[in-house]
Image 1 (cartoon, one colour):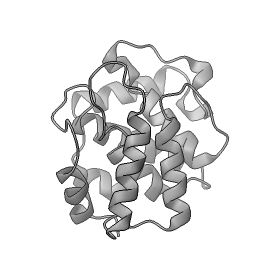
Image 2 (image 1 turned 90 degrees about the horizontal axis):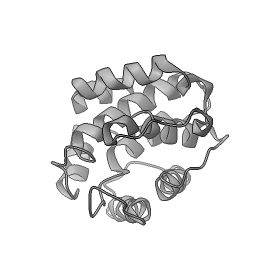
Image 3 (image 1 turned 135 degrees about the horizontal axis):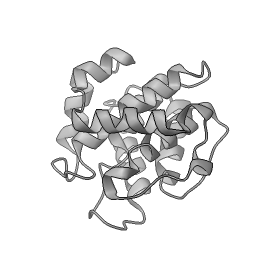
Image 4 (image 1 turned 30 degrees about the vertical axis):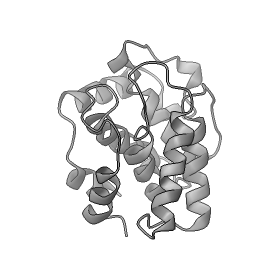
Length: 168
Protein backbone atom coordinates (compact mmCIF):
# COMPACT_ATOMS: atom_id res chain seq x y z
CA UNK A 1 0.00 0.00 0.00
CA UNK A 2 1.24 3.47 -0.85
CA UNK A 3 1.30 5.15 2.52
CA UNK A 4 3.50 7.23 4.80
CA UNK A 5 5.45 4.12 5.93
CA UNK A 6 6.44 3.43 2.32
CA UNK A 7 7.43 7.09 1.83
CA UNK A 8 9.53 7.00 5.01
CA UNK A 9 11.30 3.83 3.89
CA UNK A 10 12.03 5.24 0.43
CA UNK A 11 13.26 8.56 1.84
CA UNK A 12 15.52 6.84 4.37
CA UNK A 13 17.62 5.44 1.53
CA UNK A 14 17.47 8.47 -0.75
CA UNK A 15 20.59 10.35 -1.80
CA UNK A 16 20.78 14.16 -1.67
CA UNK A 17 17.34 14.42 -0.14
CA UNK A 18 18.10 17.98 1.03
CA UNK A 19 19.11 19.25 -2.44
CA UNK A 20 17.31 22.50 -3.26
CA UNK A 21 17.27 21.58 -6.98
CA UNK A 22 16.76 17.82 -7.10
CA UNK A 23 15.74 16.88 -3.57
CA UNK A 24 12.61 16.12 -1.65
CA UNK A 25 10.80 19.38 -2.38
CA UNK A 26 11.19 18.69 -6.10
CA UNK A 27 10.04 15.09 -5.66
CA UNK A 28 6.84 16.22 -3.92
CA UNK A 29 6.17 18.74 -6.71
CA UNK A 30 6.71 16.15 -9.46
CA UNK A 31 4.48 13.64 -7.68
CA UNK A 32 1.73 16.23 -7.28
CA UNK A 33 1.97 17.47 -10.87
CA UNK A 34 2.09 13.90 -12.15
CA UNK A 35 -1.00 12.92 -10.21
CA UNK A 36 -2.85 15.92 -11.62
CA UNK A 37 -1.82 14.87 -15.15
CA UNK A 38 -2.77 11.25 -14.42
CA UNK A 39 -6.20 12.47 -13.38
CA UNK A 40 -6.66 13.83 -16.89
CA UNK A 41 -6.17 10.37 -18.46
CA UNK A 42 -8.02 7.36 -17.10
CA UNK A 43 -5.33 5.08 -18.53
CA UNK A 44 -2.58 6.42 -16.28
CA UNK A 45 -1.55 4.38 -13.23
CA UNK A 46 -1.63 6.79 -10.30
CA UNK A 47 0.43 4.53 -8.06
CA UNK A 48 3.26 4.35 -10.58
CA UNK A 49 3.09 8.11 -11.13
CA UNK A 50 3.35 8.71 -7.38
CA UNK A 51 6.34 6.37 -7.10
CA UNK A 52 8.02 8.10 -10.03
CA UNK A 53 7.71 11.47 -8.32
CA UNK A 54 9.13 10.07 -5.12
CA UNK A 55 11.99 8.05 -6.59
CA UNK A 56 13.09 9.49 -9.95
CA UNK A 57 15.94 11.67 -8.62
CA UNK A 58 16.84 9.72 -5.47
CA UNK A 59 20.09 8.51 -7.01
CA UNK A 60 21.51 11.74 -8.41
CA UNK A 61 25.21 12.16 -7.78
CA UNK A 62 25.34 15.88 -8.53
CA UNK A 63 23.22 18.92 -9.34
CA UNK A 64 24.37 19.17 -12.94
CA UNK A 65 24.59 16.75 -15.84
CA UNK A 66 24.23 13.30 -14.30
CA UNK A 67 23.82 10.57 -16.91
CA UNK A 68 22.67 7.35 -15.41
CA UNK A 69 20.75 8.83 -12.49
CA UNK A 70 17.48 7.47 -13.87
CA UNK A 71 18.90 3.97 -14.20
CA UNK A 72 20.30 4.20 -10.67
CA UNK A 73 16.84 5.28 -9.43
CA UNK A 74 15.32 2.29 -11.21
CA UNK A 75 17.86 0.08 -9.46
CA UNK A 76 16.84 1.60 -6.14
CA UNK A 77 13.17 0.87 -6.93
CA UNK A 78 14.06 -2.75 -7.67
CA UNK A 79 16.00 -2.94 -4.36
CA UNK A 80 12.91 -1.67 -2.51
CA UNK A 81 10.70 -4.17 -4.34
CA UNK A 82 13.08 -7.04 -3.52
CA UNK A 83 12.52 -6.46 0.20
CA UNK A 84 8.75 -5.98 -0.25
CA UNK A 85 9.01 -2.26 0.57
CA UNK A 86 7.66 -1.07 -2.81
CA UNK A 87 3.97 -2.00 -3.10
CA UNK A 88 3.77 -2.47 -6.88
CA UNK A 89 3.06 -5.47 -9.07
CA UNK A 90 5.89 -6.70 -11.30
CA UNK A 91 4.24 -5.01 -14.30
CA UNK A 92 3.92 -1.73 -12.45
CA UNK A 93 7.53 -1.96 -11.32
CA UNK A 94 8.69 -2.50 -14.90
CA UNK A 95 6.70 0.52 -16.06
CA UNK A 96 8.09 2.65 -13.23
CA UNK A 97 11.66 1.59 -13.99
CA UNK A 98 11.19 2.31 -17.69
CA UNK A 99 9.89 5.81 -16.88
CA UNK A 100 12.77 6.51 -14.51
CA UNK A 101 15.50 5.09 -16.74
CA UNK A 102 14.55 7.36 -19.66
CA UNK A 103 13.07 10.41 -17.93
CA UNK A 104 15.93 12.75 -18.76
CA UNK A 105 16.54 11.57 -22.33
CA UNK A 106 14.29 14.10 -24.07
CA UNK A 107 11.75 11.55 -25.25
CA UNK A 108 7.96 11.66 -25.48
CA UNK A 109 5.58 8.79 -24.83
CA UNK A 110 2.09 7.80 -25.86
CA UNK A 111 1.82 5.47 -22.85
CA UNK A 112 -0.37 7.41 -20.41
CA UNK A 113 1.55 6.63 -17.22
CA UNK A 114 4.98 7.33 -18.67
CA UNK A 115 3.65 10.51 -20.31
CA UNK A 116 2.34 11.80 -16.96
CA UNK A 117 5.66 11.01 -15.27
CA UNK A 118 7.86 12.69 -17.86
CA UNK A 119 5.61 15.71 -18.28
CA UNK A 120 5.41 16.23 -14.52
CA UNK A 121 9.20 16.39 -14.29
CA UNK A 122 9.45 18.68 -17.33
CA UNK A 123 6.92 21.11 -15.84
CA UNK A 124 9.51 21.74 -13.12
CA UNK A 125 12.53 22.36 -15.38
CA UNK A 126 12.34 26.15 -14.85
CA UNK A 127 13.72 25.56 -11.33
CA UNK A 128 17.09 24.78 -13.00
CA UNK A 129 16.83 27.58 -15.56
CA UNK A 130 15.44 25.51 -18.43
CA UNK A 131 12.34 26.56 -20.35
CA UNK A 132 10.61 23.30 -21.29
CA UNK A 133 10.09 22.75 -25.00
CA UNK A 134 6.38 22.43 -25.69
CA UNK A 135 7.01 19.76 -28.33
CA UNK A 136 8.60 17.53 -25.69
CA UNK A 137 5.45 17.35 -23.57
CA UNK A 138 3.73 14.05 -24.17
CA UNK A 139 0.28 15.25 -23.09
CA UNK A 140 -1.80 18.18 -24.26
CA UNK A 141 -2.62 18.93 -20.61
CA UNK A 142 1.01 19.83 -19.86
CA UNK A 143 1.32 22.29 -22.77
CA UNK A 144 0.87 26.02 -22.51
CA UNK A 145 1.43 28.64 -19.85
CA UNK A 146 -1.22 27.50 -17.34
CA UNK A 147 0.43 24.17 -16.36
CA UNK A 148 3.80 25.89 -16.04
CA UNK A 149 2.27 28.57 -13.84
CA UNK A 150 0.62 25.90 -11.65
CA UNK A 151 3.96 24.10 -11.35
CA UNK A 152 5.67 27.36 -10.33
CA UNK A 153 3.11 27.81 -7.54
CA UNK A 154 3.84 24.28 -6.32
CA UNK A 155 7.55 25.06 -6.20
CA UNK A 156 6.83 28.12 -4.06
CA UNK A 157 5.04 25.92 -1.51
CA UNK A 158 5.62 22.20 -2.16
CA UNK A 159 2.85 19.99 -0.77
CA UNK A 160 3.60 17.60 2.06
CA UNK A 161 3.82 13.88 1.38
CA UNK A 162 0.52 13.48 3.25
CA UNK A 163 -1.12 15.94 0.85
CA UNK A 164 0.34 14.16 -2.16
CA UNK A 165 -0.70 10.73 -0.88
CA UNK A 166 -4.31 11.97 -0.68
CA UNK A 167 -4.17 12.52 -4.46
CA UNK A 168 -3.28 8.89 -5.20
